[in-house]
Image (cartoon, rainbow, N blue to C red; front, top):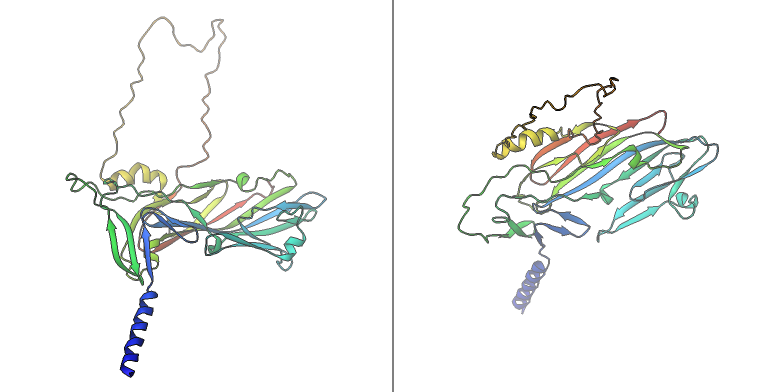
Length: 342
């Protein structure tokens, strides 16, 4: 009888163990609970930032300042009891927590904070890991298309147990190309006016300073024990502050965007740079009219002045070439100062 009970107990344990075996499947591209979306090589990008902004109210009366609730913020005065923050639930939805002190001072049911007459205050704005901003990353494009690409991975307890390969190819193209680090993101441009579109001339931004963290994660490798898949790609600086100073890049960037386009892509891909033919700008000779700097009346006129369009988006922003297994954090500091206000 004891032997039978022990066999039954063993069977129950085996069934229980198999029921709790952790199996997880990733399609490429795909998404996970919590709003995590990744591209066709398993990469997900998210931005976290932390910025202190100094504002002043130059008016002789109080002003109520409205805030974008996508940011956490805390007014750095008194005991810091005026605050608002976000957090992401297991379903990916953003929930918010507002302090009682902030609510008690709200106006017309809008979230914000008061500035007293002639008051200068520092406000801390954050987007944290708990409510990070997911960056849509571009898919990797192969010279072979999707032929030979892994499209689905299945793990059990962190170990890869199966992989699906797209093999719907013909008899041609035994070898169809090599992989070079393609750009997988586009920069977001922010200016002092887009960040602080304040119509009230009495509320002035004096300065801001802080840092940005750009985290790129290889999702299928994230929870696996063998970490067997590696990715090779390039990224540009994710958020470019047009009016501000950017410094202290960690790790240091590999090259500029201009160098990446003009030199690196053609050299590394082995294709060779395209040859640009010179444009024939010669004009036929004619004696009908001769160019002169005088009008028909004989009055001399000045030569026309060429006005070049103002460029706001410099092509010299940083580019990182990355070869990684699990994840990388690219961080940099930002600052802007205008003592005379906006």
